[in-house]
Every structure is written in structure tokens, then in C-alpha cells.
Image 1 (cartoon, rainbow, N blue to C red):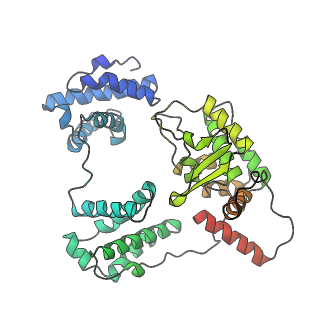
Image 2 (cartoon, rainbow, N blue to C red):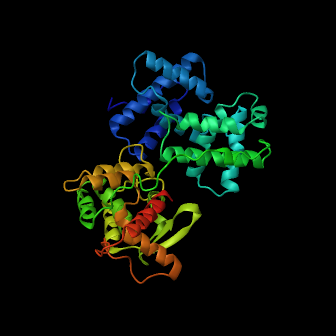
Image 3 (cartoon, one colour):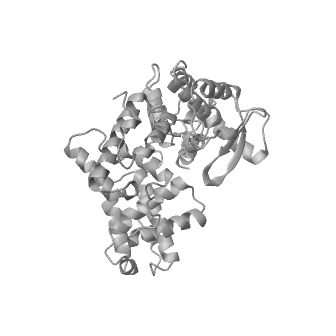
Length: 407
């Protein structure tokens, strides 16, 4: 398999085999993985020839038929995920027609309008829009046809019943239920605004049960943060990357999405500044601490692979892609298993993108916005005051941290 050659790809896809090999190499695929992808391409090309279909006839329905043939023959690489690199490459060349943006069903057409509203009118990011769209699709899929008539007859009882069914026993709970209800309110406001629903029903969405401070883990101590950073093996690519990520989280109090959006062009080495693109399309310039700068330089020089995108932090395994914010919780969870990290440290890292050990950095960022740029970054892993505090003061402090983590 390692020596599988592009010349063995016959049929309608043969002219594109050499370019596909080059693309796989750029995306970080190993020779054996390249051979497996070529075997898949050769099989697909021969199968299309047997069906009398040219390359531009590779529709989703045809691709599903091909994958079913591979499943019946017990081949490996028999899922849509395995076929994604090849189909994406062919679509990029214009060989395979791209999927239509506006869909065939009334639900898809409504969601396309809703997506445009969230992007243009509300100014949401693409990630938030995709999240709200998933919630809207679940709700609209349960409406009867025709969809327009079902929305005109939509009642508060149906809205409440949907939430109860989704968040009842065995369903969503906690933070997931709150996200669902928030997304549903957004959809119902849009439907009333556009006249699809005659009465405002956003207030009919029940609030998900939740108790403040019920799941707040204990804060990490300075020593635990240091153990977490020391657990990164700087002799490996993964260790250097993780050290740079965790140092930015700990020293500057960044959110996971802010680290994920950090691009090479956002680092001003001469001025020693970072351009942080936060929530709500906000931009902030922060000084780059010496320790974080050293970790970034070590990763960029001896860790980050060459890629055709500008995000700083990249996956190690092929296909190479920018790391998403969802990756941070898993990264922190693995690092928190380091020797010496207590159970509270593991809980704190797994459940939060910005650990409460970053409280000094977050306070510094807030003061920076209100009173101007300070002369230097926040003190390194500053401990909280050891003075005695009242129970009311501790509860207020924890409430503030919980609010920040939910933001």
C-alpha cells in the first residue's frame, strides 16, 4: 500500500490523481495514508466507469451508492469522512458540482434566510450562526407540512412541549438545555419579525432549570498551574504547541475562541503585541509577555507545520487544519492528569476554557479597557489575597467568575 502510485488510477478520475497526491502531501498525510486515499480514488474511478458516469456526475446520491458497495465488500475507508478529502479536492477544481447553498425543502430555504439574518442583522460569527442553525433545524423538523401553515398555527403549548421533550428526563440538561432555549428564542423572534408566526412566542419558551454556583469547581492554585505547564514535553511538537496554548490562557486570560482565532498576522514581534479578536467582532491589543513569546517562538520554529492557512495553532495529525475551540477542553483535560495535579485541578481544566487561575490576567484586561494601557502585563500567576473574607464576599467572587465563564 505504501508504494501505491497515481498511475494506477484509471478511468474518469485519472487526470486528477497527481494533483490529489500533491494536496495530500501538503495537508500532512503520511505515505501510507496517501496510498490508502489513492486506492479509494482508483476504486471510485473504476466504479464510475462501470456505471457509465463521468467525473461531473459524482453527486451525493452516487457517492452514497459507491460507499454502500465498499461496505458490502468489507473495504476500509467506507464512510463519508473517508471520502471527504477526495470529494473536497474535486469540488475545489470544479470537477464535481458544489452542493447548492439554497436547498430543496421549505425548512432549508427558511434556514438559509435565518442564517443570512444572523450574519447581516445580528452580526454573529460563523460558528455561532452554525450553532443556532442546528437548534432551529431540530425545532422546524418537528413541524408538520406544509411548513408555512404549521408556523401560522404555532402555539405556546407546542413551544413548551418541544422544550419539555428535549430537556426532560433522559434529554438535555444543564448548560445544554440553556443553550437550546436561547437558540429557540432567537428563532421565534425572527419568525415573528418576518411575519411567519403571527404572535410573539419567544416569551413562551420556559427557562431551563439551573442553580448558580452548583457546578463551579475550585480555583487552581499557582503551583497547580505551574505543574500543568511543566507537564508539556517540550521535546515534542505536541508538547511545544500545548505549552504555547496553555501559557496564553494562563498569562493573558484569553478565551478559547480568542486563542483559536489567533493568526500569524496578529503577532507584532517588534512592538511585542498581540491582536486579540474576541466575541462580538471586538478587537483588542495586548502586550505579549516574555514567557508567552518564548513559547510561541519555540512552537513556530520547531513545531508548527507548513500550512496554507494563517491560524497559529494547527493539528498534528492529517489533515492539517486549524484547531477549534472545542479542542481546548480535551487538551486541558489530558494535561491536567500530570503528576501532582489534584482532582480539583483536573475538574477545573476539563470544565472551563479559561481556568480560574487566570483571574489576575482577566482583572488586568478589564482595568486595561477602562483606564488605558498599563505599562506591563499582569504579575505572573498572582495569588489571591490571603486575608479573611466574609461568606458573602466569597459568594460574590464566585458569581463573578461563573458569569465570566458563561460569557
